[in-house]
Image (cartoon, rainbow, N blue to C red):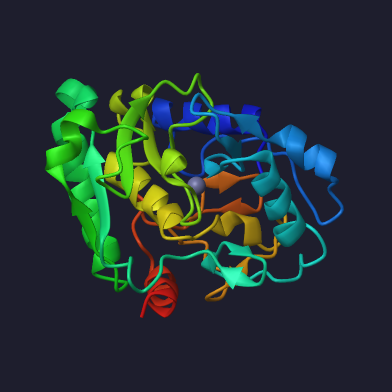
Length: 271
Ligand SMILES: [Zn+2]
């Protein structure tokens, strides 16, 4: 898990266009021995009120953060699989079979001149997940003019945010309430190209939207967590940060794009 200085540095790496494998990002290692107080201190509130942990993973309440800690950080650190799904109370956090082919969203007009790029990148990123798993993302343009956290005409909203340097983008897990089902893109994403392309960021964030957690948390030698693994560890996963410490380095060829094991794992969760 990262502390926010690490995340800010990662964000800086991206903005500066440093290639993967560039200067190492310092990292606050976590382990099964991490206390709740330490884990809580590593999280922060974003402008939307969500609790953000491990870079860009978000939950709505402190209670949810505690539940994540209890389920995934305590006692089950031996489960280091590959693409893994958020797991709470013995259940996968995923969309129901009734919902998985109706994942509707709007793209806020407040993106202004950047909106066309966001729409195009969302089309590319959603198409990749749709070609892999039995899911369907649907852009409902009728709500773009009022694309807010309270817009009930769609499942989630895609909006610009000024995160104050906390993250480049953040999404949500399938168990979030409507108010927190936001895919937020920091204004800094629209500067010079970074390590990840815009559609690469969106592929990663949409992975969270589908319930997938960070792959680098299962890196051998990294901080172990206990989500339910779907494949073996995969350094090429779209859910893997470019570089975390000295041992967890992404081998994703760029973008990032979905790896072969990402496709295997996603298909197994959404057959
Ligand atoms: Zn993430």
